[in-house]
Image 1 (tube, rainbow, N blue to C red):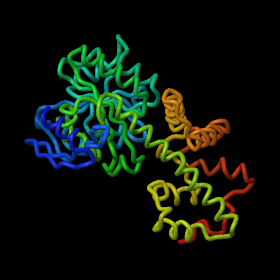
Image 2 (image 1 turned 45 degrees about the vertical axis):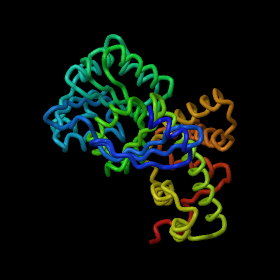
Image 3 (image 1 turned 180 degrees about the vertical axis):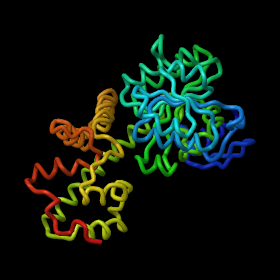
Length: 351
């Protein structure tokens, strides 16, 4: 408490603190809100000999994330609605079961990464088959789905009532980040629990402690606000460069090293030029995320017109049956508006 009072008295300073086995940076602003960047783990050493893991949902992101944890030697139980989608993980040593409850009954820490908030509610909170109904006291649920902050708080409360812990930890980095264990993980919940879980998070990427339950979800939604307008800018820039007669490969290489460079350009620029619309992140899921963002904006009394425009453009992709494409398919919506196609560019395929 004395330290907290000191932070309030000394705003806008940064303190480097050492706590045994936990090293992180705390910045104190005038509103006394604490921003923490996690650096290392933990008070209890989680390792394959003392912690059993469970996983619910093995889609584009989940499969790679599971594989990193299995390769680290953890005992692994997995549930997917379609058993065949877990076959690769089963061949690596995972054990498939037929419900989230069965996953939790054989696990100390359960991860979930599914599609929609309704899916999150079902796989975690359903009284008959949900993970929480099978988790022993002291167990932990980590939901990595991009979902509603209010649902994260609800799950945290339900887990606490059952003697368990819950963390909302959505991720950013796409399919490449999942494959390369280079995801940004935005964690909300009890800080001590997240510190203890850090050996697991380190196998997937880098974790940032964002605050109380739900704050991980708020952070991911803010992340999506930035990405939405960035993707619009990337695709509009390509449309403009095409119409101007520029070589699009040279154009992307040139702007990527200047102020227009971005992670979205690095991840999706070449995919757009090669007409590769395979999903690193589904249009359907991005529309869901942006819809949650807009509802939260309404609750906050915020007007974010760039976000609203991006959501309308992505909705148009769904209307054309392109919801299972990756988010880079946004170029298709802008091509239709302008009655042109980058596929006709003579620069496609040039080095």
